[in-house]
Length: 167
Image (cartoon, rainbow, N blue to C red; front, top):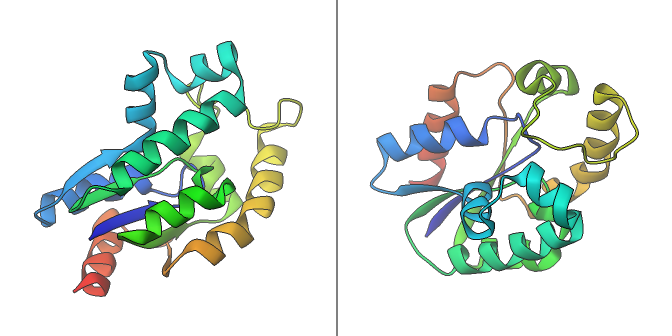
């Protein structure tokens, strides 16, 4: 079984995955890092050179590959839920934990990071978070086996919650 972390960027997936890997006999894998390794480019460079569609195709390929493995903590990209096939692959051998936070918390956590390319292209940073998050909320909710609001919890508390739920 895999532990799969889904949610919008800045919800805490990467730091929680690292913490879980310290506590569980499982290996943490960042699917975005695997995409970058496969492409030989950063996510921002992939999107700039090839566009979001190409990125999503590669994301689906990497998601299928790692979902077929066992005993992993999968830290997914925020848009992995945009394709139903990704959710099916992840759920086949995994428990999906939706890490969520408010728009304000997300904005504070991720700032205006250059390694996170714009998802809309024309909106302000705050407008983009609000718009994209509103679009994805029902997808996260439908995909998740468990929901954890990370806003008022420490990384350790989120990890402990997940560990309790998988045992």
